Image (cartoon, rainbow, N blue to C red; front, side, top):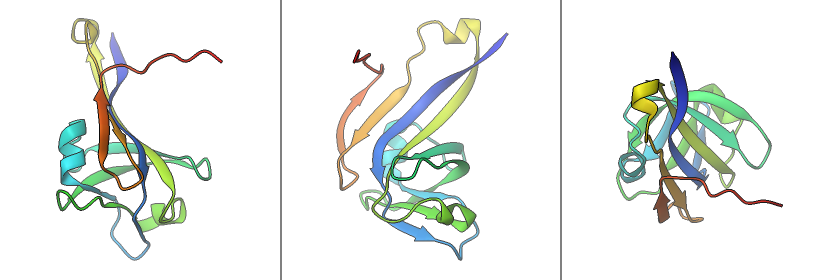
Length: 126
């Protein structure tokens, strides 16, 4: 049996650019890609906290340390500069691979700098 797991998350990234006249994809600061373990051209899901939009594209590498999160092409209609987004990548694992698997979670500040990293999402009861 194959199971789909959260592999990586960039939590509360801030969109810095929205480029409609572009081939597509999402350009992300290379240091953030490395921290999350997201590879160039890997499929990513983007969840926009500002408007509820959810969409799928692929990651491309922007300059490391630039803080860039540029939503490009048709997806530019779904995110604007200043929007906070969650960027996730998923992995398909078999039961043996899933044992002990932990995602790479990267939490960001308003300037897309790393605040902290984790391997589990804490459960908060309301």
